[in-house]
Image 1 (cartoon, one colour):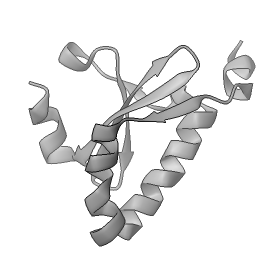
Image 2 (image 1 turned 180 degrees about the horizontal axis):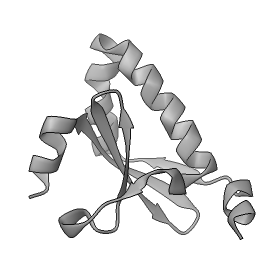
Image 3 (image 1 turned 45 degrees about the vertical axis):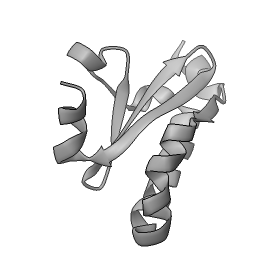
Length: 95
């Protein structure tokens, strides 16, 4: 059954809010932005690589990009990108 999960290509959904989060990274932190792009491609191929989160973030998953965290959710055949921020800040937002 795992081979079926890996063969499906998921659609990645960028919300307006998520695009606003990315703007400073495109301009000032290009290396982080490029690493984030690579992780998004990996997630599109296999969204189950991210660690499932708990508590208030129960239905979401996360992957690390250097010292930053990308939070996303899997919904049917879509990957919805939720948030991207420094590890020290991101979990405080959702307490």
